[in-house]
Image 1 (cartoon, rainbow, N blue to C red):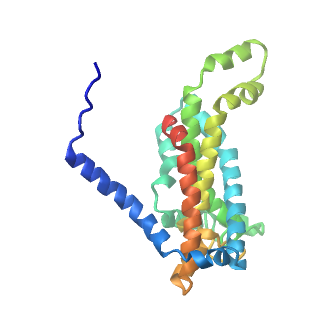
Image 2: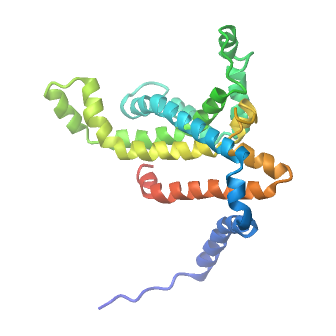
Image 3: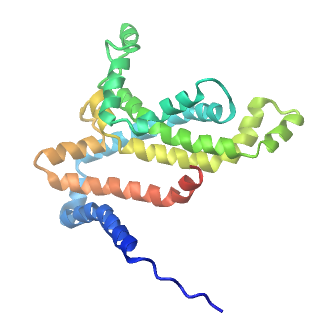
Length: 263
C-alpha cells in the first residue's frame, strides 16, 4: 500500500517562495539590463582584460598563500589540544564576519608604513600597501578561513588508524602526512582551495582599503566593476558582474555537497 503524499502547509511554501524570489530578483535584474549586443566588446576591452588578468594572478597567489599557511593551521586546530584553542579558532575565522573595509584598515595598521610590522618592513625597503603584493595579502586574509574551516573538519574526521598503521611500519611523521593524511583529505583540500579562490576573486573592501584601486597594479575585477558603475560605463559593470556571478554560481553548485558535508 502506497503512502499518500501529504500536502505541505501553505504558509511556509509561500514564505519560501518569497525568499527564493529575494535571491533571484537581483540576478534577474542583471540579466534584464545586460547589454548582450555589446557584451563581447566590453569583456574584451584592454581595461577589462587587465583587471581580469590581475584578478586571476592575485586570487591564485592568495590561494597559494592560504594553502601554505592554512593547511598546518587546520591540522593543529584539529589534532593538537592547547590552551586558548577556542580563541585561536575565533580569531582565524573572524575575517568571515568582519566588514571587509575594517579588515583593510586593520591590515594598514599592521603592514602600513607606520604599522606594527610595516614600519620595520619599510626600513628594509619593503612596502606592501598599494601594491600587487598588498592586494594578495588582503585577499588571502579574507579568504583563508574558508580553507581552514573545510580542512579542519576533514582532519578531525579522518580515520587516524591508517596513520598509526603507517607509523608502525616505520614511516616518519612527515612521510605519513604526505603519503597518508593528505591523500585522505585531498577532496576537502580541493574544495576548500576552490572556495578560498572564489572568495579571493570577489574580494573588494579589504583590497580597495589596503591596496587601493590602481590600474594594472591593484585594480582587480570587482574594483573595476565598481569604478565603471560609479562612472559612465554601466554596461561594462553589468557584463563583468555577470561574469563574477557565473563563477560564484559554478563554485557553489559544484562544491555544495562537499561544503555541507565538511561543516
